[in-house]
Image 1 (spheres, rainbow, N blue to C red):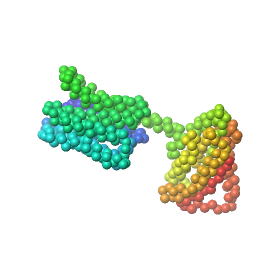
Image 2 (spheres, rainbow, N blue to C red):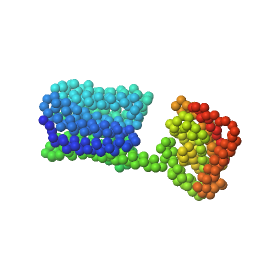
Image 3 (tube, rainbow, N blue to C red):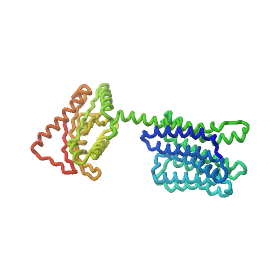
Length: 439
């Protein structure tokens, strides 16, 4: 016997899952993969319930698979929102929740299991998460961890009280399990996506409605048995959550594309476009306040030799390491940008003076003159720096950039002439570079 009434729901969820998979392929976050597994579980839930009315072991197995898949989906959605989910205790919490939900649901779905057999699994719902949380207390102290513990301790107590009530006990227990799972999803998504985008709001609201179904549906059936509500109505929250998650992935992709339009993909620093905008704004603020601003142009010396001797991969690591050095040296109010292949620019805003700019220049050269240990290679990469001060050296952004650029290349040219006739060695794999400053 097959319940064909579940086929439209299965088709709708399958299409949503395919749509989500197509969107998630371009996602840059790991949660989209976990969400996709969750939606595959929802599709499995509906597929299994096609065969739930079958007699004997087939129907029991289909019911267990269908209910367990629904629980697994909720637990995975919840775990995806845990910020420390790859920490070992979080992985164990995932295993514990999946195992306890599956065990309890399986025993509840088998007609021949005596009611007393549910006591231990019900107690494990609260005992295992609590024990795991206490054991990992020195590693993870997070409100979401204790939210999960509180929800499942409460569920455990509820089940021990109501699961063996004659008549309605098993149904009440099953609804309580799913209400706990999806209420946990609601809390986790609310905590993880508090920026209140449209996708976050729809998804969180959908999970709240999904959890409410397991309270409202039995309430309506008990107190208003004559009121007929189509089963599809109770499935609507699933589709709301699916739409919300698709919007979340699309919003993340738009934000990522916006970031790439203004930032260098390798280092994460502002690119030339964003740098030019920030330089214009910095000079405008300096004009209004009568203050000074400084522009530093930094060129990594002999970067081509680094690429030629140890490869472009190590060259990329050099650029990333240099960007970290620059960001660690300047203030949060200043700007560090990658404006060329091996060229970086730094904007020093008020309060700043020529002496401040010279001090930053010298310290950057000193830091870049220290060996970089990158994947077994010891590299010495120096830099040439040109410094220009607004408004003393130039009255506009373009003129300031030209002044700093000329000073940087003048120092590089002078250093090259001074070393003419000398032999510079670049022993593989240790490129050696000199550092120069022009102020």
